[in-house]
Image (cartoon, rainbow, N blue to C red; front, side):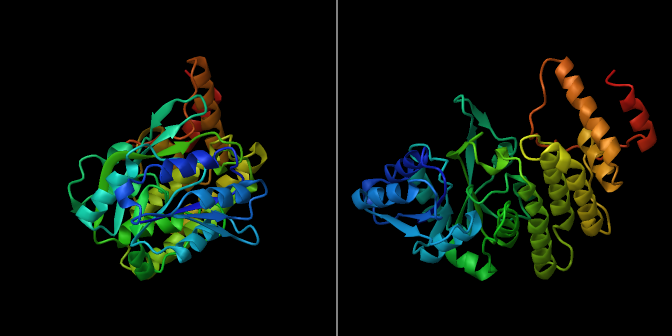
Length: 363
């Protein structure tokens, strides 16, 4: 197995990440695992730290890129240098819990999958560990399956780092990471759709750091608009590989729900960008809406989907304010990312009635 770690601006966290990998490799597996660290022209001391680490830790290789290319292309550089049958992309501000490497290798050998999915925990700055809202979807997956057997796996956190992938399978699909933010979108979903053999290791194998300054999910930037182009790439791949429309409705639902997470999150979008982002979401809604429709969720989530479909930003903004005010009155605000429950589509009131009720404030 090749573990690829792209590195940029993480001097304070790099040693913890590298140690969690290297120290976890059983002595009997020393030749079965290689660690490839990719210095993406990091502006801090990361490049020097990597060279020092490789000099004293066998099995660690360092690539220094001459210019900064971003997370996706840096992963590609590590992938090109990888020699393992399987590859795992680990972000350099995260780390692995003890016992992970042995458990992963054992399951890879037993199942021989195209893709193996692993569970993770979110770790906050205060030390609190949080189970991801999508983690229960991994439970009870027997042996090796296809996505058609367990379609809920498509709704698990769509990241590269919770999947260990057979390298030849990647080449067969022709998958590479694209530049820009949200690079996991056109990479992670096709992996599961194209796989003949999916395995699930129902064990926490990854610790995902939350709230780090500079992380995409905690950075206000117009670069969150990159998500639109990444979804364009995903649907272009789907159109080429599955012109019959299979998986279109499911991916459409996930796209709209993901956009709603971004547009509603104060840590990602500055208020002056929210309206423009919402209108872009509505345009993507119209562009990719399946001809036969899709199972819109119920409750508040479904109402947001409906407002996107109508491009009703004012009603969405009123709903968002009312929801946050109601949360404040209860003494607790809703978390920024909440998984939508698999409820049946709901019948919503007409939009003009909704707006009228919201103007009255929370009841």
